[in-house]
Image 1 (cartoon, rainbow, N blue to C red):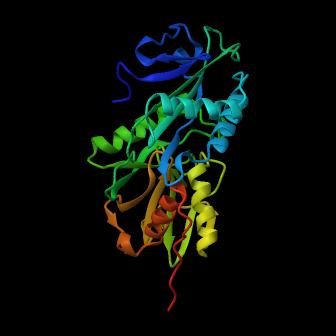
Image 2 (image 1 turned 120 degrees about the horizontal axis):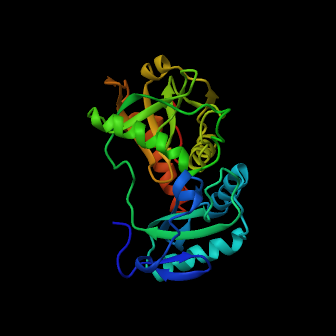
Image 3 (image 1 turned 90 degrees about the horizontal axis):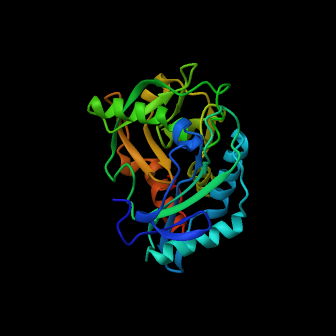
Length: 297
């Protein structure tokens, strides 16, 4: 699914076949989940292949590494050019891109002493599909914000996401919604959460979430379309009483909820603010400048 015998990746300063790439089994990243990564998308636009917000993604990867002590001896402008080369060498126009920074052999619980960089890409459609989601509130909570750098995209954090996502699927749902340690709504396993109530959008405030680049883009689009957005602590009861809800993320893009804990939302998706933003987001990544506006009576 992710590679074949012809796939080319960038690893440790050279382009190599994915099937020939070699890693170290004593890597600190393999043993402890001590690595940083990004999820980025490239789109086939009318102006050619464009990586959406490449600079923002690589800057976040640099921040993530710094937040946990992983060396980052890379130039982000060079990484952007290299990423376009990876796409070209694999004849990809619409693609998901995965940069990953790992550390060398080290069994001590100390900061990394060397860094290795992988940049891979593959065709990957919307991560959560195109159908509205049946979501359940997970019994798995997001980690304590005082214990982890939750605003850094660190590999080990995603064990928490795997547990929540699998719990949802084991119970017959499409996806999970996680609460923070105080019981407020946080986010999905790999996406940020928004809900609509009386013509206003609400989203969890920063502090106990990974504030995604797609989340920031959705907020930008709201400002352009005249949609009010409030960032606050949200109870699960407020979420249940919403008119509509959606997730957003680089892999998921913008995808609506059908229900949360079997509570079906009042608005049909086609009539929701989320549907407007779903179209606006697609226009933005494809570099189509028209922004849907709200129609008032």
